Image (cartoon, rainbow, N blue to C red; front, side, top):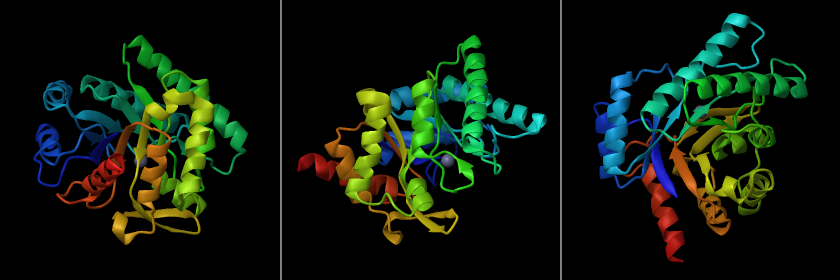
Length: 276
Ligand SMILES: [Zn+2]
């Protein structure tokens, strides 16, 4: 299992320095945060690939937040598709293995219809990526608010129906959205579903977000540090170990890029399990 930060560590100057700092922190991965726009120039992305290979740091990316693949406005829909495409293009140049994105909103529409529309739009993006030789996994994320498309079931179905799509399971979001899924048995239930839809390969190539979270009636409010939240990360790690799950855990806690922050805490806890 690889552990990494969302974005560059606090004391890093830029992406390249970030990769080196992540290495110094004893971590294994870093998620390039394109959340307010794809801000990494193509030349820099190519350099990032070289540095990450040298330092043996796995890169992933997070596409811009402003995406709604269920928009009824043509301009917004096109812009959404272009943002995912551009994130995938630059992330691929950087040697990243996956691009996480927030798929869209239900807009009070029928959920089945929304599913089909998002699937069609995703297909178009995948086809454009293929034409441009952009070989990278698209990772729609489990979302934390009930108005957002992206339940575990929806994303597993999408992933089983489309090539080059696998979910980003954000366990904090899922807990905030459902007010459940915060115990060993409930985490095991999610992992059984992954296996049911995607097989052992699904369990071996997981991309997860694990952080503390604050939530209310409508779901997610904001991320918290693990120890200041109610999230049972130890039970999650135990369930992952028992399912022999593998892949990447990216931490999005406010302290994730700090020395002694949650990205390191999760890795430390995981190592303890391996010794048991
Ligand atoms: Zn996200």
